[in-house]
Length: 508
Image (cartoon, rainbow, N blue to C red):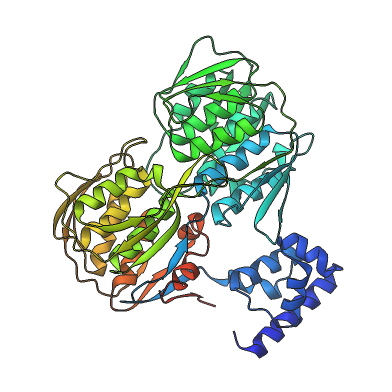
């Protein structure tokens, strides 16, 4: 922004703040930043994004500075540029939202370190705030503090925010210990086709939770009981396992969960529960034994680990742009199958010695990716529960396969619609043939070409399209990228820091 615009915007913000009767410190606390940062903004000495202007407008209830909401966010991508340098992997989106839900178990103060500032987290925070939970960003907006009330006000729940995230379903496990009956809006999130909630209900029914669904609302009734035998999950799903863990954590007794997911976000949740005083045996396996405690009142400080799916996104960005890039803080134990497949395809990589994440448990490496001549894999690409190839990493193989020599079959058997969205790469020069709703045949190598298109409604395919645009010579436009912001913090800005040219804009 030009300096004169910064000064004018700063004056508008100062006037709106004074009109509300707030000090700079009060505005800073609402934004999770420092008083000195607010002072710089008001003096026009601080670069400020449209997103920050919108947040300030929301905090001050000022229409003047909420103009950033006039239209959806778009990305303008100048492609054909090589990336270089190094980039850090952020903390896990899926772990962070699970831990936010898990904070409802605790009567004490919870601090989560380096929480991803993404739309999915913001929606959960809006829901928590609406039912009386006090949350605030601390340490210059890096960490998150959560303090629950003595009594939750479920009647005031923000239904719009709840319907924009699937994570709301993980409120069921904690709430069944706090309330005898309650209502929750239907879970929302990505458009990935029908994904039944019945596996959740089967698991939670063993603790006495009965749920009926009418008119967009889950009606929950609780008559607490103890599981008389091990809970066998009918689906080895991540959120199903997390919900069962959340229910077991405050069950006064021992709960055995079989066919449990051992994926990264589940392990982070187990580590967090241990910090709350809940003993969990079998972490990293498919059988978890939870020694629950009836009351949890602890001041806890926890650091979720890095996101293997974001790591895969950054790796794919390097591959499709034929770049040498170092990706730091990669949770390697959750990417070992992906890396083995890529090495068989011919990808040239180096990795550092392993070191521990801030949670003290997850193994990290720094991974350097170099330009490579790739060959299509002999076998199809398909996901499996951990330690198999991660379900959310499958879409990135569509972009990688598109730059490899030969034909690659991708079988995305988990979701009803996601494979269909991968064919959006054809508008950028890809050659992808949809064989059925779950299978795509990708032929490479691809000569990418620039295009203007709407963002797919599913998170990972949306990022795959963005990466292809980065590889395509010329200028592309990706419209309405809210879904990307659901799962990635400042992705465009961070890619720009290693050589991409991506501009954020709105139609205002």
